[in-house]
Length: 138
Picture 1 (cartoon, rainbow, N blue to C red):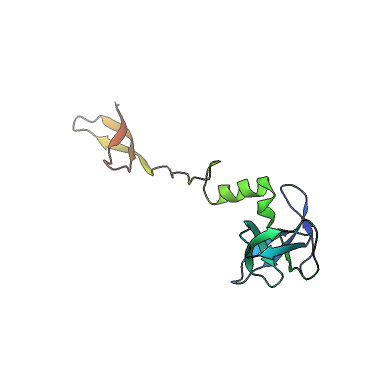
Picture 2: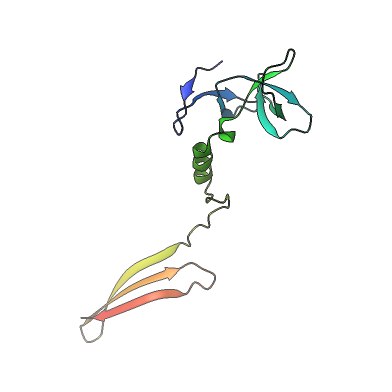
């Protein structure tokens, strides 16, 4: 079993458990009793690393399986941090990435010896239109 450590968001003790498939999941350090397959909606990590859906018992019953509650189900701060890492906003929707832009400067020498400085910005949207163009002749 892994050692306990405090959650960096709320300070409660957690354990990192390895589930089947190799991923690690932060869970509350306190083991819980549960009943699986009874239509419950609680997420549980069993002692052998399986994800189980069931009902968490208020007190352990004799013969009830023991597991751990994933910490994200009780820690709002860690849930929000995970959503930010996955690029989701407060409502759980994926943020739209900003359109890439091209910015540049060109300097051209005119036939009469003057230099023309152009500053531009172009968004790579559907039209690929030129956003801004500033030209200065010196």
